[in-house]
Amino acid sequence: MDMRVLKYMLSVEETGSITAAARAHFVTQPAVSIQLRKLQEELGTTLFEVVGRKVRFTEAGKKVLDYARRMSALEREMAGEISGIAGLASGELSIGTIDAASIYILPVVYSSFRRQYPGIELRVDVSSTSPLLERMLDGRLDFVVGTLSAEKRAGVEEIEIFREKLVPIAPPDHPAAARRGVDVETFAGHPFISFHRESVTRRMIESALLEMGVTLEVAMEIDSQEAIKNLVASGLGLSILPHETVRGEIERGLLARSRVKGLKIERSIGLMIPEKRHVTAAARAFLEVMKAELKIDIHGADERDGDG
Image 1 (cartoon, rainbow, N blue to C red):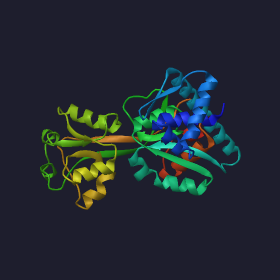
Image 2 (cartoon, rainbow, N blue to C red):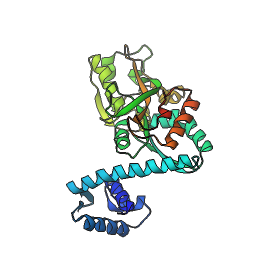
Image 3 (cartoon, helix red, strand yellow):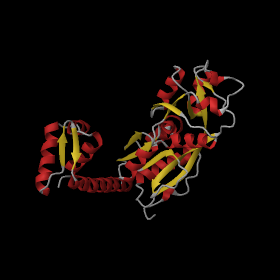
Image 4 (cartoon, one colour):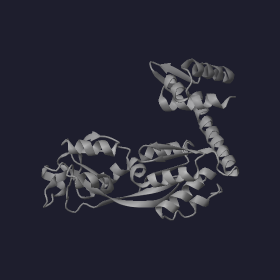
């Protein structure tokens, strides 16, 4: 069995179409279709159906996808170990981060890693924490830098690396931007621009407000902090974002900090690694660079050899 066809299947699952999967692998759509048809013939069963523009996997197809993820993870692990034996002269590293970490915390780490290990291809997947963790546990990512949750995630080792305040924001001329401050009921009474429901940060914000006896009137759900800032500045609602994310706009007068009486929210950004999976040489090298550049203690995760 050719590993390429399994990678095609994984891409079809991720993109939702054979055409998009072909584009991701820089091959033609007929080439992917032929390989998938040969795989079905080899296994003697139907793996997927095309309904309209969507691809739906059968039960057999879902089982093949499970094996494809495991085999892809093993292939990446092998490549990582061989690159380590060769002195990290080549190889790849795939990490997932939330946008705040990639914009405000990790750029210095990316730059240093590229200087020290130019032969390692660094791939960064930017999304919200929950889908990134799913991809990590599927074997598609080596580790994740995201928002830590109060609940322990099964199969994941978590290490805090950064803590930040979340601050309410409003347009500069909005009543919620009054210097004397506003009560939480007044703030929550305005349209709110929020992260999507699966966002750890959104759950954190809603929980803090619920403890104060109020619920938010969510008018829009968006994953991008940059988009949220622009929408708030345009007067379409209020929001709560990490202070570092909005500090520049507040200083330039594009946004105002809303001083909500009694509201204090902090979130932790952390490193998340699969508990029992082998940590490749490339991943250990990146963690060493992270430890040095951010001046943090990551408690031996950068030395773990895969035995736990």
